[in-house]
Image (cartoon, rainbow, N blue to C red):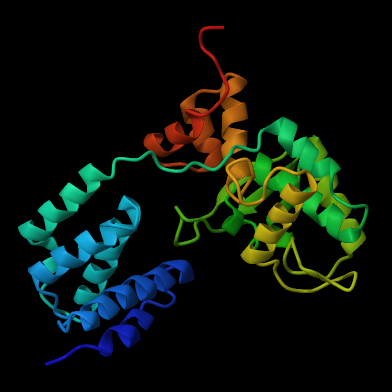
Length: 298
C-alpha cells in the first residue's frame, strides 16, 4: 500500500493544535523527503531505515545540522499521524544523525542585540508621521517587553493597563514558549508608556489590536502582520545604513536579545532576566548573553 498522497492532508489535521509556521515546516520537510524518494524510486512511507539514512546524508551536504534534525522530526511526525511504525527511531538512523551532528559542529547564529544605544537610533530615525509614531511605539514596547517579533501582532488595546506611577502593564498573549496562550505580564518605563499612548491617541479609538497597518495614511482595524514588522525593521536598517541583510543588521529578535544584554550590563542576575523575557531555559538565555559587551576583567 502506498501512502504517497496521504501525508499532506494528515499534516493539515494539526491545524489549530500547532503554530502555522510549524505546520508549514512539516509540509516543506516532508515534501523534500518525498521528492528525494521519487528521484530514487523508493517509497517515502513507511520509510525504510536505509532510505532515511541515505536521505539524511544527502541533506547534510548542503543543509545545516539544525535543518537536518528538523527534517527527521517532521518525517517522524508524519509516520505517527499515519499510525505507521516509527522507523526514524531505529538505531541505524540514530547513529547516522549523530555522525552528521558531530561533523557539522558550528555555533548557532545569534541575532544582533539591539541595545539601548541602537534602540534610540531606531526611534529617532522614524519619520514624523502616523506610521513613524506607530513604529516608535512598536520598537519601544518590543525592547522593554523583551518580545519576539511574533508576539507583537496579537497584543490587543485591551491588554494595556496604565499604572499609578505613569508606567504601563502589558499582557503578552502568546509566544513560542507559550503555545496555549497563558500569557505573561511585562512592564514598561514612563517613556515607553508615553510613546504608546501617543500612538493610540493619534490613531484614535475603536481599534481591537494595538499595532495596526496603515493604508493611505489611515490605520486599519486589524493586526499588523509579522512580515510587515520584518519590513519595518529592514527599512530602518537601510535608513541607518546598518546592512539589512548582513550580520551588521538587526532582525525581529534583536530587541529581545539587546534588552537582555542591557539588563546583564546593569547588574541583573539570570533569574531576573529570565523572568523579564519569559525564558524557561537557562541555556537559551545564556546564548543571548554571551555576546554582551561586558568585560568582567575591567
